[in-house]
Length: 423
Image 1 (cartoon, helix red, strand yellow):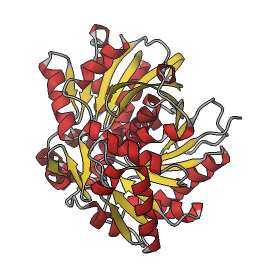
Image 2 (cartoon, rainbow, N blue to C red):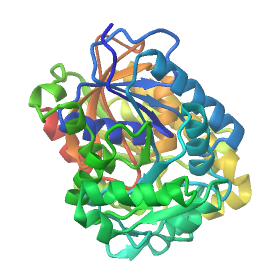
Image 3 (tube, rainbow, N blue to C red):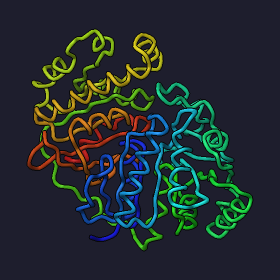
Image 4 (cartoon, rainbow, N blue to C red):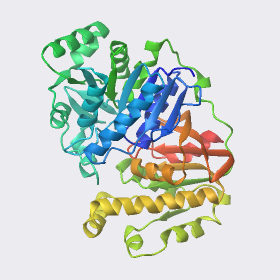
């Protein structure tokens, strides 16, 4: 078995494909595993991304899963480990970004790593340690209303320090602009001061490429998917279109959307305004015992032959809060995820072989329901979102084309654009 160059641990399923997408675009052949594999890698790949559903787990569980992923990646010979989290630094006050990063540091025996969610291609930039989404600070971007991980502070040094035992420092934009040597010098300075983790400014892809060169040989890298664009060159890998080749797409088309982000709300609206069939799922009906899954599949069955359909629970922040007030935050989310996952499984049973899933938690639930354990990463639809191909019990033979879209990613016409790419 060929040893892998880069071993990656992602804290949710859409984030995993986001990272894998950037690695593929930079020339690495990437396999994404859903959860920690039970067996050694049986595919020829340069990098493996282990997708966990650990972002909102209790801290101890998130750490345990992440360390299990690390052990498996080490057994595959990974030369460098990458802990990937969301480009909006999603976490609770307790973690899990800081605790998982420090647990990985301890396991790897390293005293220093970097942290940056910067992804300029998706309008995520870090300046003087503050995270911007487009032209506004993180806490003004809509993320302050996230139903599970509301982000009310854009100061990443402060956010991360609240989650870490080790001191947290900053490598600012002036240092990054000077290039690899300056970044390495700053790292040495911070280590001498006892700093264990450093947030890194990045306002352009050039910044990430400069940072990437400085990270060569660092045992552990943590960040969003943006840092990935600068790492393959450290292994002598150059971009190649062959890295993203997938089998030809066949079958029916559908979208399942559970994200309540502003971007996904716009995408749902654009799909409906384009005249495509769409059905909303009501959490209160699910809670009342209505068989929403059967109703949704009965609605979709006669329409699928005419083109893609959309089934969604996407709603604005006020509607989400109203449902949470009645059902509880965790139960409302879990109940909708279970229903959308059952609907996704039913759609595939009806012949859907091109499936778009929007939302990190929804994607995790759907992938688990479909019993998908491994995906090949293909071409990019929009920054951070690729098509993938997987074998699934419900899609025997040629398998299933699947895209797992982070709620915050994608242009307004993402759903229609995605299917056009496979045509």
